[in-house]
Image (cartoon, rainbow, N blue to C red; front, side, top):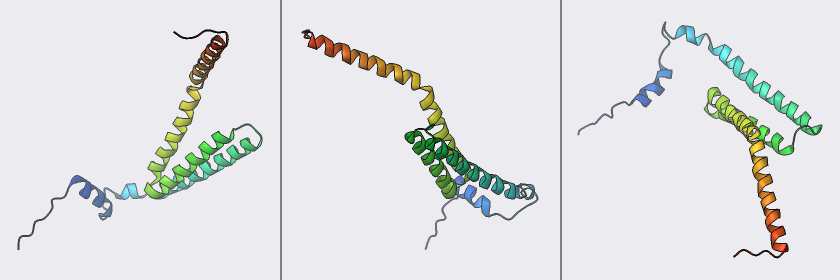
Length: 136
């Protein structure tokens, strides 16, 4: 019987790296683990507090329901991704939602202009048709 051993790929050896015993090279890094866990818990708590402020702004009429829903979804996705994949991935997901909101805000003047021009064209076209003009 011939036994064929599958060669290890980089991915296999990379994921096994976390299971290796501690050495003098990894010991200083392991001391930062409690700090990382504290920062992670603090970040989660701050995002929930921020969502609480958003709810207060919504209650006072300073924030729309759709914006509140978008922010709540972003917070939930960020926490879920952090729980499932790890803190850096959750932070990246939250960052993507934040950048999406800022991109929406930045494009608001352009979207308003496009909408204004569309409705102006539509109204002018409707008025022309009502006045008897017909396209050839």
